[in-house]
Image (cartoon, rainbow, N blue to C red):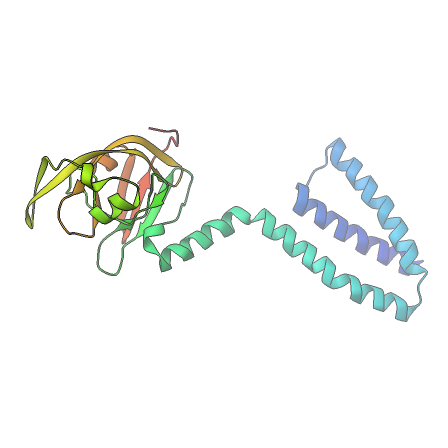
Length: 232
């Protein structure tokens, strides 16, 4: 009898743990109903285990243990999936700073690169483009290589714009980007320009940052925030 009680209590303990992990502790009517089903199952399982001799019981318990541990680990992984996703994103951002990671919905945090600059990698017209964050620049400027990759016809561009930079006067052609996506931020029909020179850097200037709700830099971490993820 004592063996049956011990086995029954053990099975009920495991059932209660699984209910806590899967559904949370609940003493409402639905929770008590589920507990009743678990008790019935525990009675049957305890009766079956008690019918086994010592060696067979030990063999069954050894066989069940790995599956039970695996089930608990899978449940824990599912319950912590959001936290694990954020940690994996942060790990990826350490290796590839321009990819960034999201701490909360509607934001993106980017580590400073080894050269002391911040880079982001938005998807422009479906193509990933690595861009230097430059709050000193007024506009979004693509290199000729980046412009070609996103499908712009360089021969049809009219280089009528002029920008005064630290390296002198730069000519550029005005363009409209059909869409720019960064995280869940979607910007459509965004004015930009294409650099007429040979620079291979694309710049993300204030024309982009004015679309955000806020941004800041703390401890070599740039955080962009757009609290409403709707198209802008």
